Image (cartoon, rainbow, N blue to C red):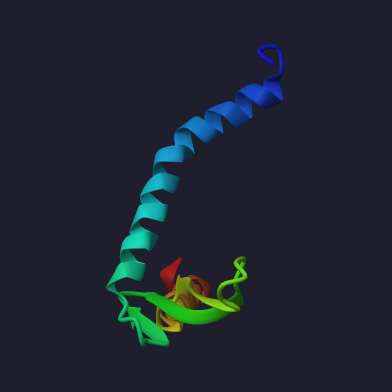
Length: 96
């Protein structure tokens, strides 16, 4: 595939982003370890983790517990407020 430009581009992207992906997955695993076993949700520092029940792949248990992690709404709210402020400042003719 050395003659393929697309292959070269995708290979370069893969090599460049692989360390960030590994760091991301490691941080996610470490965060999961910090959450108490009986917790349904954990929040802090702009991140919210929710416990969810998913069907197990094993016949030994019918459900297993997993975590969904995403940015918390308070972070999104802060970004939205900053964006609204910036848009207001840009739309004001006195600032131009």
